[in-house]
Image 1 (cartoon, helix red, strand yellow):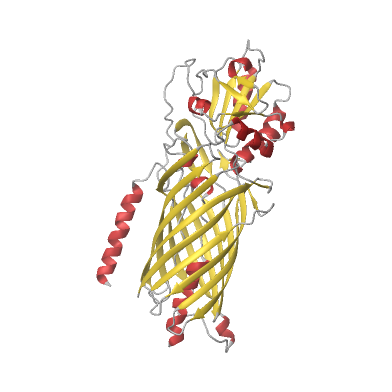
Image 2 (image 1 turned 180 degrees about the vertical axis):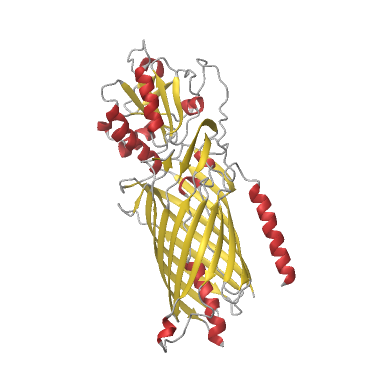
Length: 324
Length: 191
């Protein structure tokens, strides 16, 4: 019985650390993180604060370059999300970030402070299992079966994009495009170890554009490239005597976005790639109704670890409260 | 739980209402909303004439737009202005200008001006030019630390402007995939 209760709760705790979505904060865009409920939970409220610090970028050839000397480029995000179970195997979630851009170039250069709602994400998840798949000991082959979540995600352009009435890119808090993602999470825990693989493929929808940075232009159609991502994480769970849980997780992620098209012609300056690493730490109360979590996502400033994308560090701290 | 369900659904409804009030991106328009303007008047939009300006170049020389126009001391067929903030997108656009656009107009006299509007001084622009732009690319890097030209031409990250030899603006918007920039340059050199 202990396993049946603790297992899914722990699974959710671990997933909340390992399933970090890509912030998509290039040029201001920010989107929420994936939120998952454990098998026994009906509802949760998830809040977090993220600080993304920009530190250089990769050219489209993969060469890493520094930002202008003295630059201090930051994005802060307050993420508010919630997940709701509406059937034994089905759950949905919504996450909306509030984005604050704080940028300064050099000691005497351009300075900009802007804020607004970022792009919201909506997710629908199907759990391909009925009982907890977490085990404390492998006694038979079936104990190795992982928990598999199939998901469909929609990112809605609720943020401020370059196609709104903005003066420049510093005001941007979103990318301006709808995106539909197919997701799968494969998660397995054999205490105290746990591992998760998260695969995602997303398709942006074509949209008309009649304004660039506040100036109306001859209308054209644009489509951002489709994107694929994969992440792998491994964690270790430590139980205190009072059954508090302390979980550490390390992960690596890969993201690639194909080139955009403008009026069906390829945009050679678009497309991107990024490889990142992450470290997570979470603490869950004995009655499993609250988790406090923190994570650090780091991109290595080496050539060929990214293409056409900013290099950033993201530090997040958050609290999730679960109702059963 | 029933109360929580109601509260949750109410919360979702409030969120939906708040989100639906956001920007033009949720229901993007393909309507052409460009204002009607009188061609030849001074301004920043296509068909308007650009106001003259002078900016410092990274070789410490002043560059004045009118000198690059017909009857100027260094008259050219066209001028391309690209606003940079030394980011990945800007690097990709600059690379495309050098590798795609410049070869198409090898036999034409076009000035390619890269305008740095984020560095706070000419000295800073010189440093960024050394870090990001090779001398062999044939681009002139200008410092607009007072935002004179940025404000005058409504510049910003990736904004590209094509001006023909009589000072008429033919293109002023995001670099995009570069094809409209090429069209504008062709129009400039043919005129």
